[in-house]
Image (cartoon, rainbow, N blue to C red; front, side, top):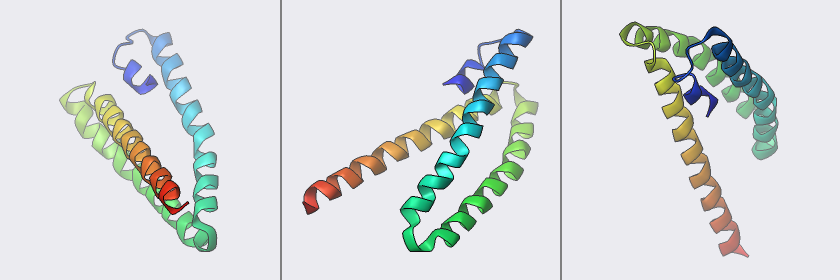
Length: 108
C-alpha cells in the first residue's frame, strides 16, 4: 500500500516518510519470511534457504536495472511495477492459502 502512495506524494518529507515505512516493513518482513520458509521446508531447509538467498540476490540485481529502464520512460513506472508485482504475490498467497485449507479440510 505504501508503495502505491509513492505515486501521489511530491514533497521531500512525504517521500522520505513513505520510503522509510516501506523499507522498514521490508526489513522486518525478511527474517519472518526466512523463518517461515525454514519451517515449511522441514528436511530440505538448506535447499530452500539457498533458493531464498539466490532469488533475493537476483531481485537485488535485476530490480534496480529494470527500475532504471522504467524510470527513463516515466518516473512513476517503477512504482507501478512494484505495486503490480506485490499485488500479484498477494493474490498468489491468498490462492495458495485457500488451497491448503481446502486440502486440510478434505483430508480430515
